[in-house]
Length: 471
Ligand code: UDP
Image 1 (cartoon, helix red, strand yellow):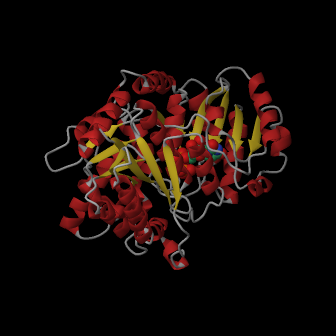
Image 2 (cartoon, protein in one colour):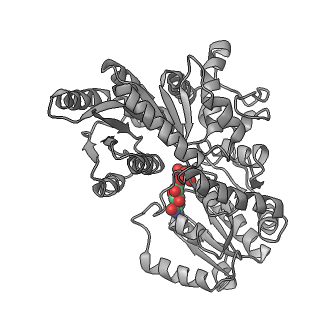
Image 3 (cartoon, rainbow, N blue to C red):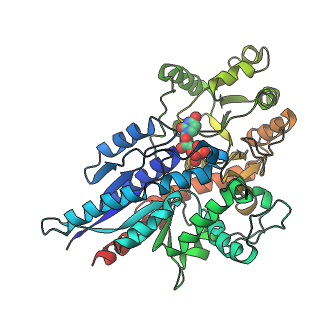
């Protein structure tokens, strides 16, 4: 019998590539018959990602990496909507993917090959590649680097568009999204969904429309974390895709960054080692989270007044000049301001007791994996929806903001007093119920991926489906 080979096409962004490759590693670890070929689209904004992708697959004998050629970037005016820009860029790769998959198919058709391509595994931004798969009579699967609640939004958007025919507006009433138990305020939807003019909304609807055409959707979550959403979708339906909760998929080594100063980090770790358990609050806002000078000052004042110990990843590092006069001297010994930090390692350190986070999905999974409760401060992408889900749907995080929008959005200044109160609640015992639930979720997460766990079981079912598709 031939062995199943999957063609992975991750979106060329750090969180997407690393998550997809870690998921690929889980499949390989689960079943020695599985082979994976990764088609790598050149990263448009991140020059070190291509090299890192190579290093990740180098240690995997059953993974082949094919670098797709460079294509011209879309015109810069499309950058008014990053989502629109990104989908146009990825669509321009269709002819290259067609050519490369044609070559793969020809080489697998020969009698010498023991493999047979079982399908494409596409990032959410790459659903336009489904037509290429269909051209080769191959099924497509989606690997969703976000969660099952977000999948509810994706299922809802095309149906809503067919009825209403326009973008979502801030004046619209709350939305009844599948997978949610509460009506969802429009203010926590991704900015792109509210953006009819720059093309973000149209890009989202186009991507979401293809979800129904997938044979399966693998979601980076686990059943115990989102029981209602996962069970609403995993029953499947005769005309819809099968949904598999396969997570948490996190890279235990963490995301590297060339700007990390190793020597400086070693000193910070020594400082952390000296702190009592759960005594330090960690502030970090993802790979693109940044604030203007006024907001940096309010954060500094808030954490200073809270009196708690802190580790604050503030980027870009030039922002450190915006700290209030004397802040670093006054907080010496009590807190550290740094640039890029190895976040997974930080969250796993016994001294860390809380996390002020932008609620990127990888950050949320990493904090749950280590049992560290979050205070929500979403900034961009689908982070507001993640924050809403964590606070209102699941009771697994403390609210600072749910609908803050940075990067030129409606992110009104969050004053120091509110930051101080949120840090105090998180670190001073006011969030005991959340902390307890988060600790329970840590155990559930670890159990889900172990042999016999819910996500382990889902991956087994998924591999059965790959094998069925080549029989
Ligand atoms: N990260 C890190 N150090 C930092 C900032 C981010 O290691 O200083 C990692 C973090 O651990 C996570 C990823 O970068 O794995 C960010 O992904 P997430 O989905 O949370 O947010 P995004 O950056 O995509 O908005």
